Image 1 (tube, one colour):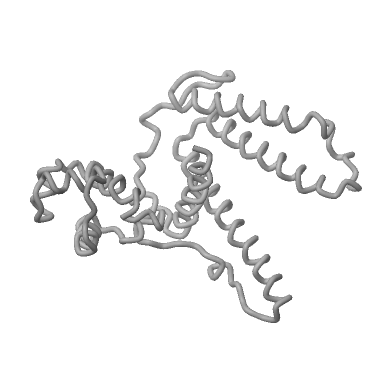
Image 2 (cartoon, rainbow, N blue to C red; image 1 turned 180 degrees about the vertical axis):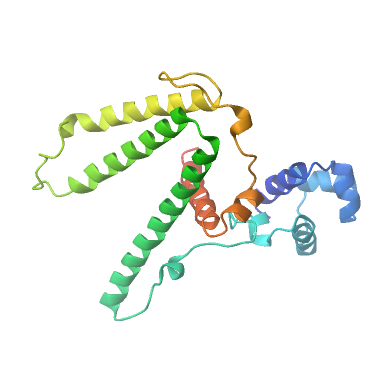
Length: 232
């Protein structure tokens, strides 16, 4: 059993406000055994994985960390309409499908962020989050644009030698402002967020409110965290 199973199983129990004793009784195991499962001390059998999935109304793939979506939904190149052809056409189709897939991950996830910002209705938070995303796009555009050294830099006023560090510093400042505002504090002349205006969110709520967008968000989270884990 992988390391995600104990963590996810424990989070699901706590999310439902269940004590370990109550969950164990309803699952038909001893509290001691459930404790060992949740701590990763002992591995359970497939039958218990299926029982847990039914009990918490999630997929086995979600329990095992194979899908960030509770129903087990994932996005793949097939979702981007990849079609087979000649070897050359297949490579091009695959490249196009990869672009379409990543575009969907970013676009759908961004749409959810702005939907949430609309609900929070805080000018400062909307400004800072938008600025952070704009700087990210700016940095990646310059990287792609400058991949060909013959491309003129006339549309940029900051030199190539300076923009990388300056834009990264700007992002760090924006992120600090965003965190302060989210904590209800003033930042950059903006009032902090009123906690009462922030909607209650869980994966289930996000899936219900944004059924067409949430799978992309979950996949983006999973892919990003997998890359982050490699740095730990």
